[in-house]
Image (cartoon, rainbow, N blue to C red; front, top):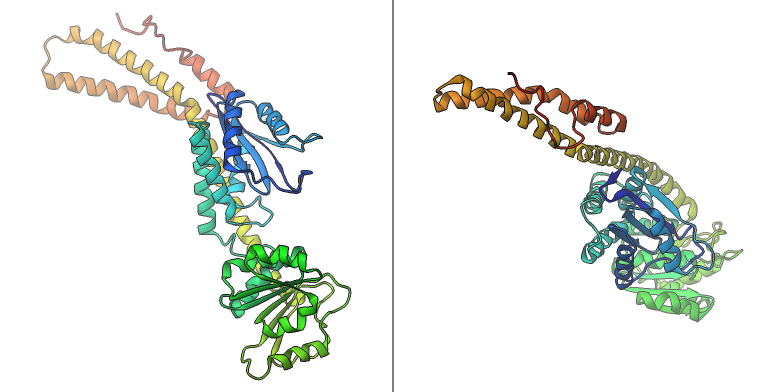
Length: 425
C-alpha cells in the first residue's frame, strides 16, 4: 500500500517493551521539533504519536529514517526495542490504536484524543499530505464509530476500576467521603478512578505520611497514616482497602469499634471494599449491620459477567477495524489505477474525435440536430466499449502483472497516440 512518495509505514516502541519506565508523553513543542527534523531527514509525510504508553512515527517513505531518528531522539544507551509496520499492517495498527484495542486498558477514551492531537500537530508542521491526512481522518472517524456502536470502553479495565464502578452503581461517589487505605499500585489506581466523581472528601492512609501525601495531594485529598485508620473509617462513607499485608488489619473488634464510633445517628452504612490479597478485612468476622463489605470474590463474579460482554465488544470492534482496512485497501487500489483509467479515457476520446473528423466531410450538409445525434452516438458507443475494460482494470488493481498486461494491450505506456490503422480510408 503505497503512494507517490513511497509506502505507508509505522515504527514505534511501547512502554511494555522499553527500558523506559517513565512513559513517552512528550510535550507538543518537542513533537513539533521532531516533525521538522523528520521532514528535513527526507520523509515527505510524518505523524508522531506520543502518549504515556507509546511513541510511534507514521510516515511515507523509508522506515529506516524514522527508526534511526527514534533511537537518536530518545538517546537510549542500548538499542531501543522497535516494532515496524508496513502497508496494510501499518494501517491496521493505527486503526486498532484509535479504536482503543491496542491500549493496556482496552477501550480507554484518551487515546482517540491523542491521535487527533498528533494529526493536528503534524498539520500545523506541514508534514501530512494526500496520504497520511486522509488515513488519520479515517482512523479518528473509526475510533468514534467503535465507541458509539459497541460497548467497548464502557467496562472497567482493571480491578480498581471495577471496584470503583461497583460502588458508583450501588451508592454513588459524588458528594461522598472516600477513604483509600494503601498507597501502592492498587491504591493509586483507585484514587485516579474516583477523581472524576467529585467526592466530598478524599483521604489516603499509608504506612508513611510522605507516601500518603504523594498520592493524596495531587488529587486534592488529605493524607494520614495507619494509626488514623479507625477514626478515618468512622468519618467515611466508602473505604477502599488496598494494603499489601499478610494478615487482615480489620477484624471483629475493630469493625465493632468503627460501628460504635459511627453511632445510631449515621443512617447510611459504611461500605468497605476489600481489594487486598490476602484480605484486609477478616472474611470470617461478623459484620455490624451498619457496615457492608465487598470482597474480591464479589468483584470477580461481577467481572466475569462483564468480561463476556467486553469480549463480545472487542470482537465487534475488531471486525469494524478489518472492514475499515479493506475499504482503505480498495480505495488505494482505485487510486493506483486512476492514472491508467484517465489515460484510457483520453485515448478513447482521441479516437472518437479522429473518427468523427474523418466522417464529417463524407456526410455532406447536416443540420445541427443531426450532427448532435451523431456526436451522441459516437460518445455512447465509446462508453459502452470501455465499460467492460474499465471494470476489469479496477478488479485488477491489486495485481501488478495484470496491470502491466492491460497497459501493453491498450498501449497505455504513455499519452502518445498513433493514428496508424485507426481510421478507415
